Image (cartoon, rainbow, N blue to C red; front, side, top):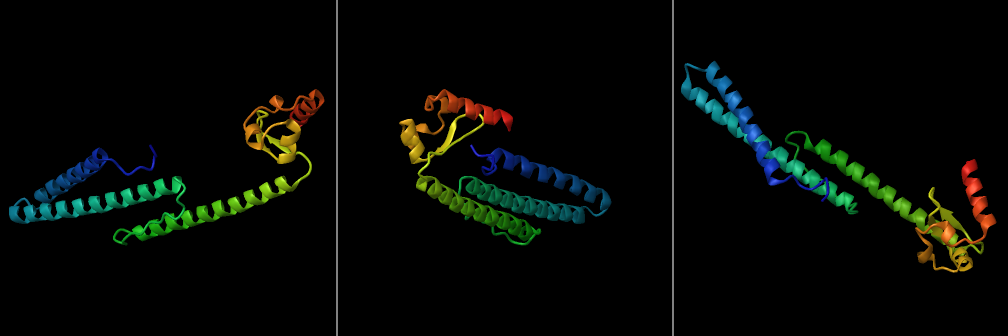
Length: 181
């Protein structure tokens, strides 16, 4: 389950009940202020209740929209955008989200291009190249290195380097190089 899932019904209900509680407090204040004018106090309370419910409903709808858009963004749909009315200044929030989503989309696109370029360079090299992580697991390997190690490129990924490299001096060189840096 995504942390950006739309807000569930129980949370929405708590939000609305909280709004009604605030409304009740405002109504009580209005009743005290207009204690001699009970019809005016009742009308004021009803108006405040309607306004509070409308505000709560509008903000909840905006939060649901943002949660769905963030969920799409996290799932890899970088075209997710938010469009909002400017009742409470939501367009600034929507514009900020859309700018951030556009920047993420551009960065991901740039990273994909760089990855294809690096893969093309690795594939075209005659020399064997192996990239390992801090735990000496194979991150990248080109075809020349895979041929020397006697494995497929896919078969070497995420495996310990020592599983493929049997030359003790080469392994010692790698370990010494890592410890010196």
